[in-house]
Length: 202
Image (tube, rainbow, N blue to C red; front, side, top):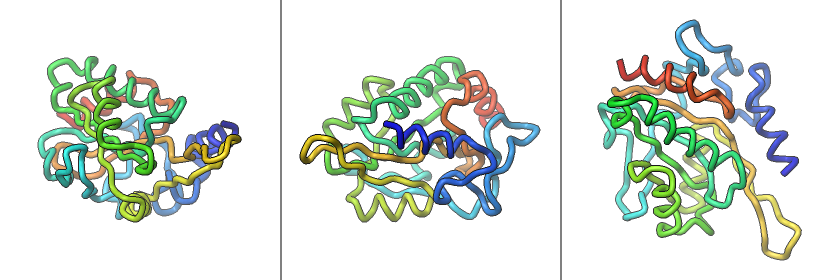
């Protein structure tokens, strides 16, 4: 728990980088004048994803053209960051009104060992039936996380065989044309999220 809090604080600090997880080249920038989140428009990373959904169908950004897409790396047994972020995205979808139907949350599990398709499907449904989860094998997940400059690692628990996952706490946001635009730190107020998404949805 302490290590997770430390990682979260590191990701939230604009002047620090967590194993490259939250930075653009040269380190994280301050929010631009137009956005509350970190503007990473034109970044050479986080360009796309290609992983199976809970039905086994490979999904990519092209599947969601015309929507603002929010990508988040997490796991279903996460005690705080993951459920908080997904609940906030569900709230933001409501705040957007009619435009909320053009918001697509994509949850990528960093714990494919325990996160079965059935479990992921139920987890997404508990927040919003329109949210989707993707699950690759460990090699696929590691490669994709690297392409996003995202961090995750298994942390052994106190009981034999138990573990938790440390992981990057923020989210990546794409505009309706499929272009990477923002990195949003964990803890950004939902009103600020909604403001940024309204701009992207135009």
